[in-house]
Figure (cartoon, rainbow, N blue to C red):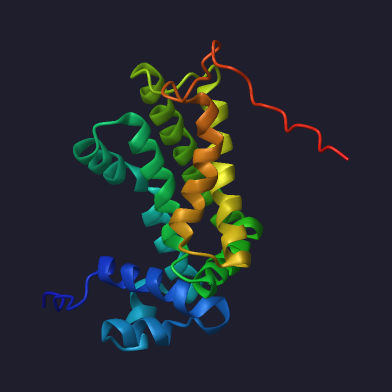
Amino acid sequence: MSPRPRTVSDEAILDATRRLMGKLGPTRFTLAAVAKAVGLAPATLVQRFGSKRKLLLALARAGGEDPTADLLDHLRATIDSPLERLREFLACFAGMAPTPAELANHLAFFQVDLTDPTFHRITLELSRRNEAAAADLVRAAVAAGELEVEDEAGLARALLATAAGSLLNWGIFREGKARDWLLRDCDLLLAPLRRDRPRLDSGAPGPRRASARKA
């Protein structure tokens, strides 16, 4: 007999897993919660993936295959300016912080990425790809005359570090949207490197000093 067709694809299960990670965090995340979200029995998920850890590994591997490729293709197709493509690439990291609670849940899962060797290998490869993609975007902005940079790879690392730290600060201050907060900090780093930055007119008079107050 041929096997029964799957009513829910693995891709749909992984999408539900990704959403629930942010909503539930590691303490409340269960196979039963995923099964309920996709309309399957928990036993069916055990049959396909084996355990919660293996399901999370399947999600990590799916994300580690080359998650930036489709995004970069989309950015090239929709945004003409290489600098704006770079900014939009960085802004996408705000997707992990729709709310402070979801950011906290993602960070809780990130602890597994740092302590479990198997998860860490996947996370390391993904991080290397993100760095390479950011560096390529910086190089494109330099080639287009939008940035003046000597160390493109170094700037890419600094921008990604700024984006990560900015999200943490947004989770603390909780002012406005994470995307706006992140772009504000990254733009501050980019401002001195932009070719279109405003330049002072050397012939213009300097700022006037306030006159001394008479007694």
